[in-house]
Image (cartoon, rainbow, N blue to C red; front, side):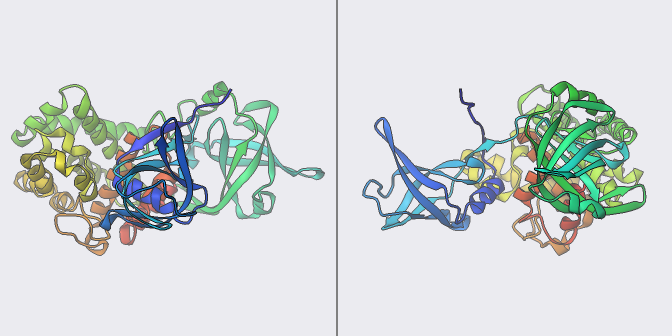
Length: 450
């Protein structure tokens, strides 16, 4: 009996662009359309992706008389087993021009939660590296665990151990923490990348090594190993490293929320957030996660103090205040996403979206208890380093460090909310092409080292 693949639908422009872009020149792509109870299937290659011209250029394996201009077809991509529906804009011989997709269906590959650890948690594993058929090649290692799931493990090793952890090599996992695995689980080494870990004020350079198990670990074993000291997991979206610090951030969120309820401009907005589910639930979750992610990343970067955490929480609450009567607008990440749904919005909603950064900045300017640079961060909240943001369309060199921190954190939080099986690696792959340069690169690196 087969297992049905899990898919999710994304309408996020940047995610669609990244996935379709990664499929350029990939073999295994094909075009298809229904025809009665059957379907026509034509192998092809994506040659060009141009969202500005709203087109995807496809080279067919051979000309087809069964396709025509104006028809609706489906393009199946090899990367992430993704697919989208599009109209044929033009068709000449083997060249088909399709409209750029509004949404994309992509396969969810992870079947079990993955748990991540900070070095200070000191989660160790004992495993043996070996080469098949060579008993003398076996070496026992005690290694620091970076993350674990039922299907695999990522570890940190010092450079001196790299010769034992070659890609394609074999491992035998004996123990997680003080939990013996009987019988041991074997696996294959899949990747090895340069990696650094930070402990206190020090830094250790080495490699992050990933492996896939031949058989899944028991869920109960993972649960016992993880216990309650996990940094964050798929089911417990936390990025703040230290438990005490995390509790401190949560306490600050409560305190600042209470203080803001006493201020006139915030009352209507905060009241809207308390109206139950739907968009209100999303925005409450969005704000709380944004506070925690900014605090965690800012601390790792050494950019913030205890007082700065208050400022970041204040900004997280204030940045979408223009949407008190239109909470659904808070889900629109930026210009690209706005264009996709513009036709569905009223004139009032369009105005609210475009003026939201300036509106929030003005509220902060009038608030005597605000923070000195809160106005700048709120004004720059929708800017992007490639100048495609708004309201000013400035470049990365003009975007302040904490504004950059806010922008990256904002994208990451929305990605987490939309992807229950999120991973930092996937987020970086999707967003690194436009969240790059200057401070953005440092922030993405800190996120990768989380």
